[in-house]
Amino acid sequence: GDRGPDRAKDAAAGCDRAKPSGRPPRRGGPNPAHGPGLAHGTNALDDRLQPAAIDAQGQWLIAPTLDNARGFSDDGLARFCRDGRWGYIDLLAQEVIAAQFEDARPLRNGLAAVKVGPQGWRIIDRQGRFTCEATFHHLDNFGAVGLALAEQWDRHSHQRLRGYVDHQGQWVIAPRFAQARAFDDHAVTAASVDGETWGLIDAEGVWVLRPC
Image (cartoon, rainbow, N blue to C red; front, side, top):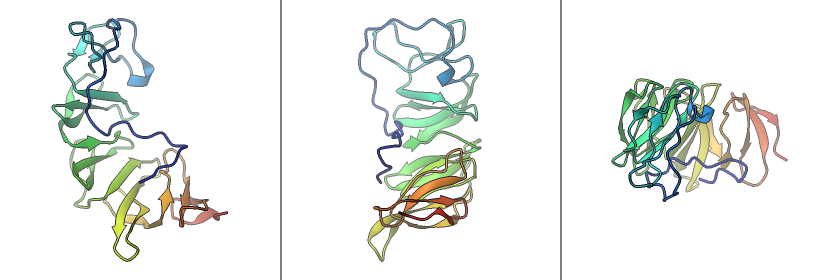
């Protein structure tokens, strides 16, 4: 679904290998965007950007053999892609959750959304265990209030509606919005019932600012 021009799209939609850059391997200090002590590196043999990880001394923690990789979240895990499947590693470059998912969101507040089929997103915890049996057409990151923006098909209106679920996949805010934003780090977010006019709701789905 459309997440709006004011929200950056999650880049974890696939595992395409990066294009040639002609840049040498980075040997400097850690990049804060990728977590303490870790940074992306390049493959010096074929001169293509190959996701990898190095420490502050420039030593390989993960050899440049991954299909793709992302920065570390506040939970201390980063997503990586190997052989077309996504998993998670920790700050010591240990594989915490094996690469097994078609797609994966950042792990935040102890939870993450992972794609297990063409239209199937499920919830896992920090150990990679499914927290429930529920599946969704779309599932966003879990915010500080413990809710994730989710999407399901409504058979009556024949459209996808958005609401918010907890770690057990239970609808805390019923799927009644045509468009909505994730809560992220705040307890208030934007939502629209008709997709045209927007307002602000709190973590219980109550309008803080009615659509206008």
